[in-house]
Length: 189
Image (cartoon, rainbow, N blue to C red; front, side, top):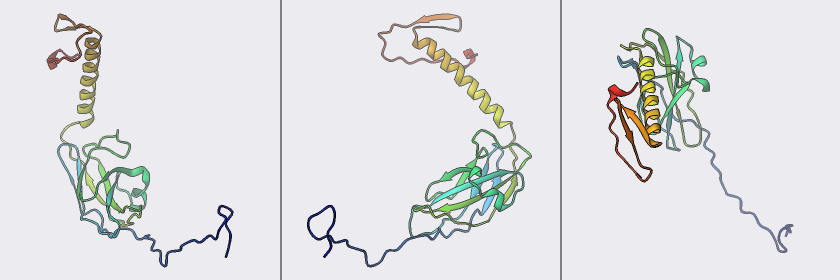
């Protein structure tokens, strides 16, 4: 009989008769195809992985240029993570989420599977493709960002009680709790 410092009576600890620790990564063959689209994206495809501890996520890696698997499969090249059951993903940027894919440049992509316990498959399958975007995607997004910024400024002015749209002055009472405003896109600077 032993005594615990926390109780006046005997102390017993139950120990499981067996403890199984899963340190096995998912069974996964890696990326199976990579295609470039005219919208400036790349589409990566892969088969489903199997594992005893689902759900399984798919970590997508991308690097500019033709690189080795050793250079590709580093955390700084993770562009996105696809949830369990997804076997295809469109990619528009590098891992920094701000550098868009550029028409005519080569990109290397790979996919690894990760189980619910954090075990990551170590396949070294990589594919390379040349981006074939028909337009300049960054310019498209810059235009959208500029339009959104102008709309935000206009709406901020309207929220403060007055606005000039198309040469017409509008004022609003602070008693209005909601309103619907239609803005002609040609009027946005």
